[in-house]
Amino acid sequence: MQLLQVSQLLAARRVSDSVTVGVNETTLDYLNQTTLSYFNYTTYNNGTLSNGSSCFLIFDQYVPTVFPNGTVVNGTSCYFPYYPVDKRGSLGLAFAVLFALSIMFTLVNLSKHGRLYLPQEKRFRAIGRRWQWYWMLFVAVCGIISGVSAVDVDRDYLQNLAIILQNFFFYLMMPGILACVWEGVRHWGSWQERQIYDHDPFSLPSDDRRGTKEFYMPLVFYLFAWLMTNLIAKPAATDSRFKAGGFLALVAWCIICYSLQHSIHYYKPRNRGPFWSFIGFVRSAPTRFLLTIPLLGVVVGYAIASSFMWTINIGNENVNSAWLYGLGYAPVILIIIINEIAGFIVPNEDRALIQQRVDRGQAIDAELGIRTKKPAWWKASSGHGLTTEQRLKALTTEIGGGRATTHNIGRTMELGNMPARPRDEENPFRDPDEITLLEDKGPERRPGLGNPDREAESGRGISSATTATMASRTSQIPPQRVR
Image (cartoon, rainbow, N blue to C red; front, top):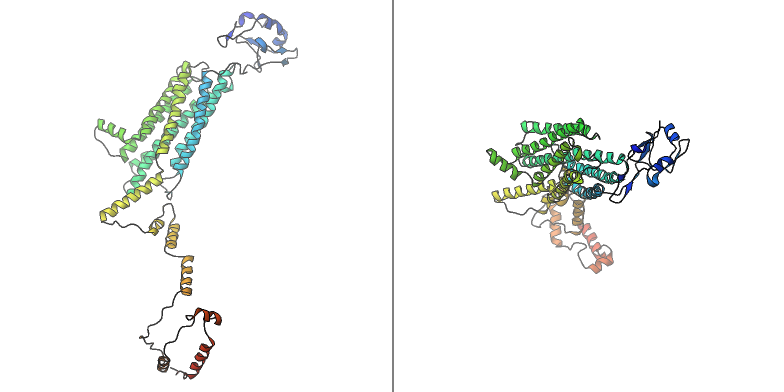
């Protein structure tokens, strides 16, 4: 049975408006049919030759030479980048550049908002404010790999690893961007709680209904996000796993919306009635969440729709780029850009909390009528971000403690004047005869306070005459009585 039939081959495959490829009878005659049959090579209607292990192009200048021992010389793989880069690859490369640029700004915001200026509290961990930026880095890396892989999707003659990588990392971006928005919403609620707790620690107990909800909501969200990743991040086009994963992503999106409503309900002023509650929700919710949550809904909706319609699925080689990048990649990069802008506008939470404490202190001072300016040591003693030991040490240093005090005392004793006892005060323990003798002698000049030149000559500021006088006076003093 002859394996090579011209009627089984396509006449041509369109590459562009002016280029065509095809297999003709000259190509078929060039190949050894017996050798091909022996090694199970089959010619397919897309201009390829394959035996299940190897695949070669057999049109135009790509026709290989097959020897009787099965060796193929000058063969071109079916996965050779034959076509030029089209819209899919160009747009994918552009989005990859945007994702790469976002990494730089994400690292800046991570450094800004992740830095501590206050002692870490057990109830409010620093890692909570950093998770949002960690997930943005993860999404950016997935976006870069997926976008770059789109170039080879356009160029390869037959699809192979490139389209698998683009599919896999695109769907891997979905749980990442869901977690990014979720962590932003969750931490915003935690920040509202922290401000209230800092003002009144007893107003928000951790074991009430509110605290129970906030404990279980992250667990439920990450459960559905993990299930979605396990089901959808496997290239299987439009099978049931993609459908189930899309609906699980929808459940995770609904949990994000509920978490935002929960935070506004407990940490913002309440409004009565459905209409005013909706108005209060819009006023209280940050603008970035009013933009990012709908954009996230577009991504989830595209995932669900593409699991039912093959024409808009990313696994389709000929999918319209408007569907793929307009509903898939564009909302993701917009979410990242919005979060980056918000990160540059919003101050560090510790610094904002410090400023709130200062404002409250000034307000209390104004109510009590205290308008005095705090001394210089006040800032050191109430130093934010210091431990108790460091704060006390700073306070002691400001008022002259430690080595500085010892140095000051030594300098004062060495260079200062010693206080003298007034003459009108009598020492009850002195000998009366000694007091009478000293009064007869008159006041004497203290050594070392005379002429500097004479003191320099004498070495210690006491002349030889003075020494003789003191010796004679000592000999004239009678011995003291024993008490």
